[in-house]
Image (cartoon, rainbow, N blue to C red; front, side, top):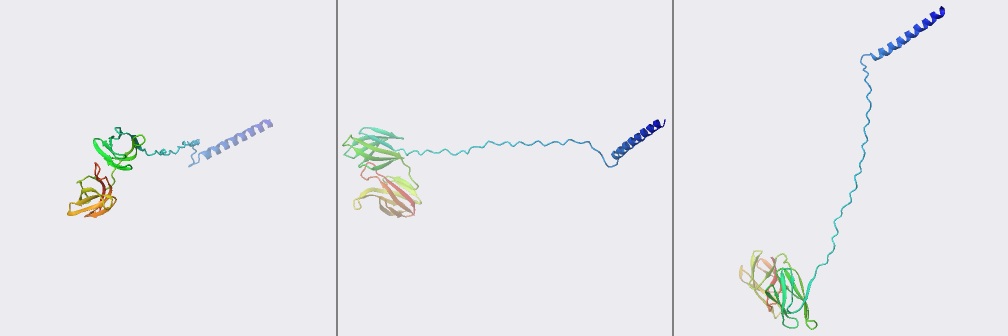
Length: 232
């Protein structure tokens, strides 16, 4: 009997302890000011993968090949012709061992010696060699020609206005004293201004300087002066 009473007492004590422990847990959770929120799982930030851009190869400018300057040379005989750009050059006749008469687009041009040149429009024609004693051929070189700044091609009695002066080519002649080609020029602002200039020389006339770069032989079929006119 006493054993049953003891067991009952122990069970009652255990129940009381359990009840007290539950009360204590409930009391802590019910304290004012404390709100127990549900745990939110931490979201891991995904790692950004570094995408390596393909390396671009450095594009170098194309290497320009050095193209040798074209030399337009023509070896022809009397009666033959060649074409350079818009010009057709024909050998009309041979006057002596070196003198030749050409027809260039209908205009007659005479060369009296080799290694001399003539300007025809935008072509420079050079009489290089003659081989009359061997095979009867002659060699010409043709190339492009362009006037430089302040340069002019003037024929007999031509006039040009430059830097405030009107310059007139009065005459083209060979100077026996100096053994050189020469021209006579004047300016409209001074009636008594006519002066002689030898090939390669320069003078001041009024407001301008006139330099003679080249004179085509005064005794040839074509006469002209290649001159430069600049401000004095």
